[in-house]
Image (cartoon, rainbow, N blue to C red; front, side, top):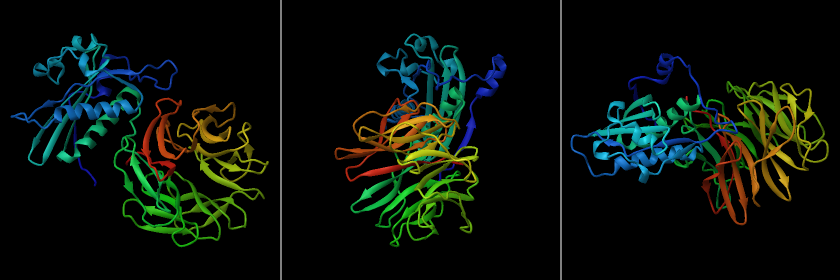
Length: 437
């Protein structure tokens, strides 16, 4: 359901605040090895209705916002039992807050809020304070329906991350993956916070390799619904599905171009798996590889000047990089005897992939210019199909082994691993959507 909000800035936004103080817009580098988590307090929200109700919304807003911030891996949420503030006397504006009560317990930041409901309309107010300075960093008011309250929370969680780090959070993004349903495999999506599981396809067939377009409007995938592994494109807004390629053999999508007019794919039109660049509107194809080996899993660099792909042209599957027109092929991975599923970080310089270690697949990253790989996962399970978040700060991937199967997310440094979705029948693959436009 599309939700319409009226968004109003409360008091002063960050850009005005920092220019008035003269120290410029400074963001904390969460990618720095010396980074420490933001210490933040999130007390119960204020019930702004004339007659306070007993529906636990005061606690729900604080708990849900704390949960959202916690799963990012960048916040230390202070224990409510340590709070010194008297809730009955608490305010949500700077004038009504005793900031010493919060800095005494170690809070660097304080998140306050209030809400009221008038019939079918809910209004919420969120305010982020610098507790040490006693100053407002950003405030927002959202107006919607009571059932929109979770969307209001996640939108402000994105605002908090933007104010502190210079980049919005990922709460408006979704991860597409394959869920086993009996003998079939169907595409599902799930939100970054683990909510909103949604079934995309119902073909009662094998459906594989979902790939989001750069604007999130389309999802390319392979399906056997008509007997052959054909390549399809689903319009996620209208629900319509178009068969893009139906050649004999495999037809597997790779990554889209930024403007959505072209799609990389692995096709066996020449009798051998090769990489093609397809114009989506008319299915015109440009063949990029012509080696006698197997060439698969193409992914564009953020500037679209290069393509990473997997080939066994030197014996074992390894990751290569070529120019966008298929020329100047060079080997990227030199360690390990089985490296596949490359994913190029939106931050340009990193490629994630899966590599075999002692018979199990693990997730690695390395510089796209070459160098030493960095192993991020280590347990005795298979970790496959890494996918970057649109800000390059997280990786989603599938995990399987010992009768278990799940989709996990971790920070780009391998920390803060959490289970996004778990299924006994099986789940695999991962493709991360862009931010909503």
